[in-house]
Image 1 (cartoon, helix red, strand yellow):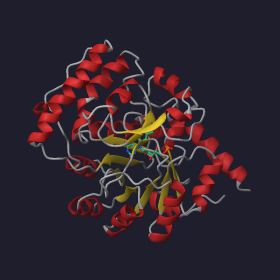
Image 2 (cartoon, helix red, strand yellow):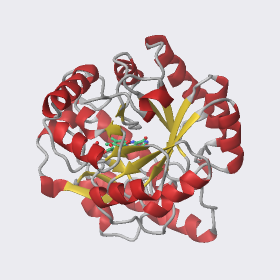
Image 3 (cartoon, rainbow, N blue to C red):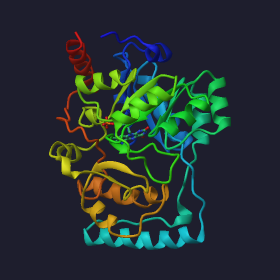
Image 4 (cartoon, rainbow, N blue to C red):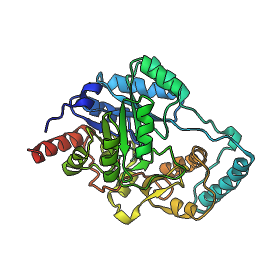
Length: 355
Ligand SMILES: Cc1cc2nc3c(=O)[nH]c(=O)nc-3n(C[C@H](O)[C@H](O)[C@H](O)COP(=O)(O)O)c2cc1C
């Protein structure tokens, strides 16, 4: 297998394998582990403010001198309307009562106490920290941010979940498209439709690769050489792996979460809006079952903020029924080896299978 291609050349790496950005799971150690074996590590900054973003970037830079990507949520923030205010009150009461019934003591902030960050401040922080590879999800960047990042020499990677989204990203000057299949763990990167596209990863990747000219990274269900090679056949030249790294030594998941993950079966892996207000794929639990039956799910990022304290307290109490454990459809052994070792195994297996 010849690894050198358009993606390795653009990103300055030897192998076009991308450690998926996974906010809440990715650590600077995971990113550095990946970068140090000449693959692309991705530092997930989610919706952190500028100060916390800079802190994470600097910590990663202390661990590696190799290139890595920084990733953030390019989301729109819905306006606070009277309806949202009323819904927030109802949703807050629901979550507080559910927590109390399950012996979790939490205090949820009022709507006007929430700190909602937009990605603008992250863009400035990323430029000032001289990061040259940026990936993003949940939307496209606004024109000004694209111009600012590009004029500072940054390579941009946008996420799509449909052919239409891929074309929007390409048209606006994004350099690389990350095609996210429906199989993928975590949040959908969808942004052009009200609902998420239900097209499977194979069909989506094949069609996007016919519709656009810029290089493609595929994300969703890659967990061994066969899945990697299948996506290569369908037009991907970069291979993004998330769920395969969830149990790794550098993952921020707690031991009780890794244990739960290693017992998961296919019927438990679902798409839900209950934790954040956006569809994400993960393990069904008491919180999801209870919340899915109500009308109390707010739009992102409000639902995400609303459940944040519950998730923090549940994690502290090692209670897997009230934390979000995101995972994709490709169940694997969720190895506890280092990120570097897991990726190296994948590279060796692929070289062997493609001989
Ligand atoms: C726990 C978790 C968190 C994630 N967080 C992010 C994120 O912060 N940014 C992002 O672009 N994608 C995020 N994703 C999606 C991944 O980048 C990637 O698309 C997905 O993991 C690929 O599918 P796989 O899990 O089957 O490998 C997350 C996925 C998981 C499993």
